[in-house]
Length: 222
Length: 309
Ligand code: SF4
Ligand code: SF4
Image (cartoon, rainbow over all chains, first blue to last red; front, side, top):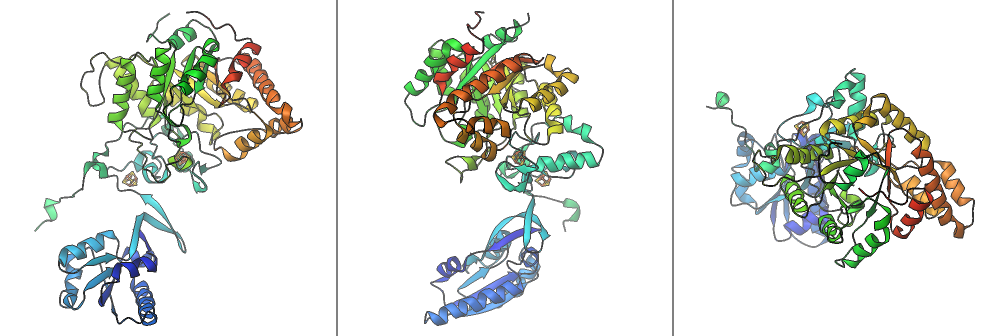
């Protein structure tokens, strides 16, 4: 999933300072799972903002709404009739949702309420960690199912580097060294001999380096 | 003797001499004297001088320009090049720039993470990794081709080196990793600073068991300790560094003003012992901001005078 975290409320207040009618728009997908922008967080943010404006002696109307998804035309259409009531929307969806909502409603300012962080997993209650950088050409078959692009601090494809210490990465003793994990896993699979195959120079044109990407599937187009 | 390049380092190694290299770290500024002074101090005691490439990710004068300074002094530089800061265009371009000044040695590295240095909020590149940089230089040299496939006019002639750290984890893949670098085309290795000689010897034995010592020239890396404090720092704070307790104790057991001398003694004893290890073909003495000690180490370790080739 896409993992996001809440923006500090001060930053959101600064973004909306000039508006009087605001919609806080949540998303029921990834940001709900990572507890940054679902219905619950929409409610919490709306209450905190109302409290802030009351204390500040300002009259600002804050409404709440959470869509099934903000990255789909179908669900975004659900707010078509009410959008005009607001002079700004704070979207708690990931950066994708914020943009897609903005594209759909050209005349309404869209402000991000979360920082979109990475593609990752819920490793534990309250702990989300990165697993993929959408490099566009997945290498996991040769790395024991562990991604060096997103999990090695230097995205070394033929690791580990000389800084790997007791299973941890040179940049932080709390962080697992991806290459230690890869080696442990290859060993568990009885495939450590594969370690000596050199991973060739990667085609990064499928990564963000190649410019904005697109997937076209004619077979499913109508 | 078949030489692949005009490198003096290659010639010394292939002639069967024990090679001695050292390093000069460029300054945090543009004063060329900072390079030439250090180089003057060590030039008669070493065969080649590495120039570090923004080591520990602290921004410094560039390795290539400093190598050119050495070249202008008639010395033999080893261009260190990290994959952290340059993409494949810049790497190939700098290799050609170096080749245009007849720089004949390169050391291919990934580089420390930028968070260690003065630009922690910067991007890192890592378009290639060190293994792939080795392949790149070999392709440019041996096939005369760019990565993109086009021909290079006057291809670079570089003796290709890399680092190896026998002390990083997991230990079990440290020899396979050396084998991998050899398969990628590396011709010489300069190791991480050795303080745990037993472990280094174990690594060398495993390398010999696979015959790797006959496929690559291994230069043992050494850094003299200036003090017990430095030993403790290296032990506890530098990732991938293995400083045994005995080394820390030996330094901390003696008065502060004698510790530097003891650090030099340890370094020389290590060289003496490592000379007897089959497969060790030279020494890389990294006397960090202590270049004036290189002459003493080289002389007392019986590595002086340096051979004429
Ligand atoms: S190799 Fe690429 S696509 Fe596969 S998990 Fe890693 S970043 Fe994602
Ligand atoms: S220690 Fe491991 S994860 Fe960290 S940069 Fe080195 S190889 Fe990558």
